[in-house]
Length: 388
Image: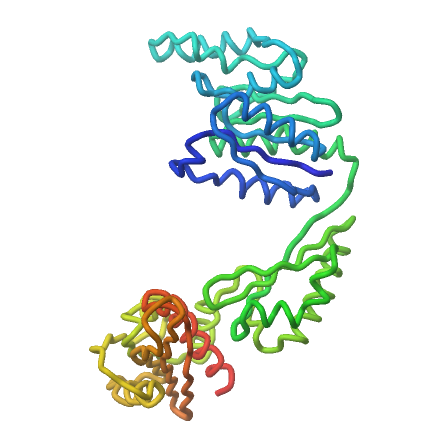
């Protein structure tokens, strides 16, 4: 079953409210095995809302609208549904009495509030266990239409209690849609795309690439009749990706490089000290909660040529007795200072028994270089701790 989501509200288009409902709904629908091909945001204009619903009904089996069913003049979702399917408005008088009683306890009267008891003629009003406005369940041609509140708590309750059960019953499908995300560092997006080119051609399981700074994440998604089938499909692709990319894959799902480094240090009972120049204390900020952290220092920037020699100098100059010292040099720029200028930085890791030093190269200005250098330094630390 294909489900389309339409978020209604000009405030979403203006960026005044972040549409967290889209992410929440996407996760819930994926959990039930439904396919979501489009998510649309439309402002408070009845003609555009009608057009959006009509388009969604043409390309999806079900449409979920969030927002626009409140009491004010710009809440137009129920009116748009009426226009589309050619019906009038009905009022749930029992719910209207509930609203009147709710208003009376607050010593106010507001006839506009009674709009939250209205719904398109012939539709099923959906109870709202977390708020006041009734939801809507109806049909246009061959598509189901649901309208739920935009308030996240109300939306989630109505989706779980009313909409998802109706979608499951209508679909008749017993399917599970699941994803696993692999985290990589060391290869660029284009390199990974080339190495995994043939795997990308598969529709189920499918893979997609997500960029997070210097890390490339690979999402594997599969759909199947049962959890064990889906897990087997994902595992097969994951194993192949790990074989091709080797140590570039450093974790999956919620695992972060920070958490890996903290675990590596904690399992050794090792203490850590940090000396950094170009990263201006940003590495220290990410590792300061490590149980063995003994201190961090930011040094004055100097003009340098050899970033690796400078990183070693900073590591050797650390006066603490820490078991592990990580040192990050100044940047050396190679270019005209534009977004395509190359920035080099040296990272040195000194342990009781070894010294590892690496040069990291990045494109962009200083701010962008810092965004890449901080996780890059953590990955150098991770790789060093894995081998000593």
